[in-house]
Amino acid sequence: MSMSVGSEGGEEEAISTINTTPLVDVMLVLLIIFLITVPVITKTIPLELPDAANIPTETKPENITVAIDKEGKIFWNLVEMASSEALLEQAKTVAVLTPQPEIHIRADKEVRYEYVGRTIVLVQRAGILKVGFITEPPARAAARR
Image 1 (tube, helix red, strand yellow):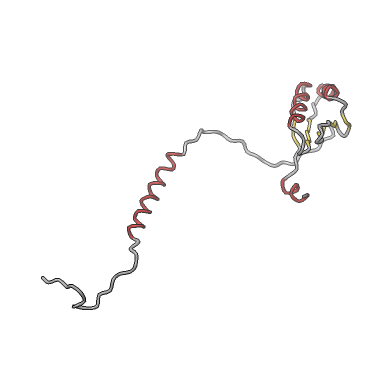
Image 2 (tube, helix red, strand yellow; image 1 turned 135 degrees about the vertical axis):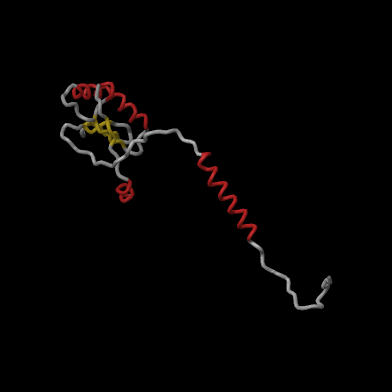
């Protein structure tokens, strides 16, 4: 049994590459651990979420459009309402019709939410059952800018 010291025997070179096998082994083990534990960590409450669809509104002659500009002025089918009491009275006269018309609210994007909320409350107090909002689709809104 002999031992070679120095460079007596042959030409031996030092290995200058990194052995990546242990690194790959550790990464595979971590990947397996994450794949097993992630479904256990994710806990959700079972819900039946509603389906959303973008259906264009059908403009019927009996539908009423209530518009609110950025100053808070309320318009009933292009006619400006003098006060919120006038809007309430106008809505009460329409609420007794059969079939009851829908109220479509169009509000300026700069209007304070307070005015929209007050309008909704007034329409509901009058007895209108169907209230909707009219918005502009994102593609059309971006094209206008």
